[in-house]
Picture 1 (tube, rainbow, N blue to C red):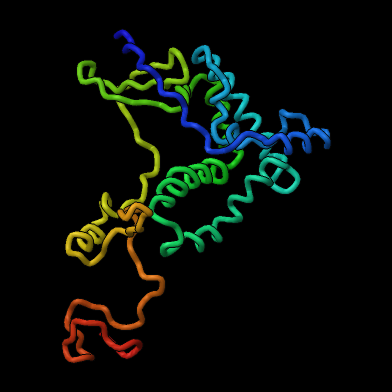
Picture 2 (cartoon, one colour):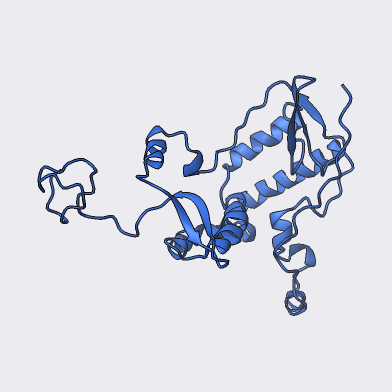
Length: 260
C-alpha cells in the first residue's frame, strides 16, 4: 500500500516564552556562561522545533541523544544537578498553585488558556515522569530496533479501505507507518461530562451534581470538566431521602445533630 500524500504540516505552536533579553544575555556572558547553557523555556518545552529532521533515522539518532542527556541530568540529581534542580521547582510549587486556583482563583478564560492549555501539560512533561531505569530500558529497546518512535505531533487516522490505522509525524519525513491494532495507552483526561463511572453519571443525570463552571471575562462560563464542590464540606444532613431524626425533612438538617 502506498503511503498517503503528505498533508501540509502545521507549524509548531508558538512559544509563549520570550527570548533571552539583552540585559540577561549581558549578565550571563559576564559570568562566563556559554549560550548553549542559557535557560531557554522554548527549547525545554519543545526541544525538537529547532531541529529539521531529514528522516526517521535522523530523528531516531536525535531522540537517543536527548534520552541519554536526560539520563545524565537525572544522575546529576535534583540538588547539585542544575537542570533537575530547576525543574523540581515546578513540583515544589504545585500545592501553592492549587491553593491559588481553587474555587474561582482564576477567571474562566485564564483557567482554559493559562492552566489547561499551557501550565498543566508543561508541568506534567517537565516534573512528572518515569524513573531513570525506565529511560535506560527505552534507549535499549530503540537501539535494538524493537521500538520505533514515529515522531512528535503524531497524527493517527483510520484507513477503512486497508482496514488499518495510519500514523505519521509531520515533523519527520518518511515516518508513515500502518498497523492493524491501535492501543490508546494515555491516561484519559478527568472529565465529569464524559465519565464512565455509573455513580457520577447517575448524579449528573439526576441533577445531584454539576460540572465546575468558571465565569469568563466575556460574560460566558468555562466548564473545566471537574466536579463542582463547595469550598468547605457541609456539616449537616443533605440526604434526599426522608430524615428520621428531623421528621422526614428533605432539606438540610441542622449541623452535627443528624443521625440520618
